[in-house]
Amino acid sequence: MSTQLEPHKSSGASIWKIVLIVIAVLIALSIIGPLLKAFFWLALIGLAIVGAGALFFSKKS
Figure (cartoon, rainbow, N blue to C red):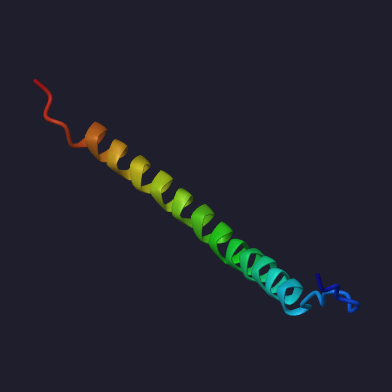
């Protein structure tokens, strides 16, 4: 039966990988968030235009 006198070395690289992943997710969210907000407003304006066109250009019986 052998015993190890040296403690196990914890790799510091795994901590840096987690930090980099968190930073990448935050950067992605900071880019995607405003884009989603812009697409929302474009869709809302588009729906308003389609609705106005349907009201004004519909054939009246």
